[in-house]
Length: 286
Image (tube, rainbow, N blue to C red; front, side, top):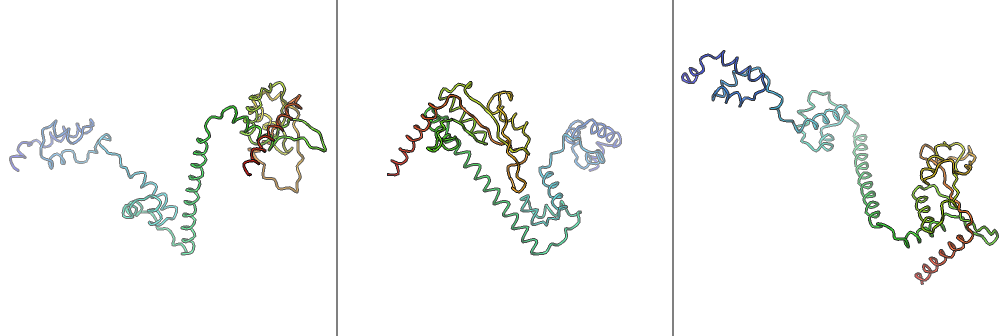
């Protein structure tokens, strides 16, 4: 040991050099190699009190977990609940939050309710994930429609939502009303497929008078790809204060009405097309 210390007799001079190198941003290994010091105890004494440079510090993967654990503890969670939430050990949790006040003990009934609520929230989340996955898979199953497929879809849409001729009231009009944006777009694509010129179309909005009429008109004009100036006079529905309506708020935009001019022949063909579809369905049922 005497031999080793004699090699570094001028300790203060070595410390000045080591401290200067440390403050330049060198690691302990770099200082060791630069000063040719191979005694770890001496090296530790030379840099004692000098913090290591930031670049030598490894990021702690548990920093985020620790912060979250402390946040949950302050919310009143027990070690068990924090463990379930974060998936880390209770010993780590105890170390991270030991300086925080203990949460008040809850009534066992309340704890049971909280646990049941957490399980139910998880169940609802999983159901929502499954629901969205099913819808996404179903969307991919459809793919691009052929012209014939779009033709048949359009006939079905019109017969479900469009105006129809009655024996007691001959009205061979082609008028389609709907509040679903995608339905309107498919219907307009169907009219394009049939060769119905846009000049023959008339558009207007139907909406409750208590709604934002101007915003609804702009919305539906964008859907149809037209200027609001081309919209007909909006039909306003009077609000009945005795009726509790759910179609309110910013997402309520009323219904869009698409009418075709000079349409008697077209209406007759639509009715005939539907009868063809209906006949096939009846035949399949035997």
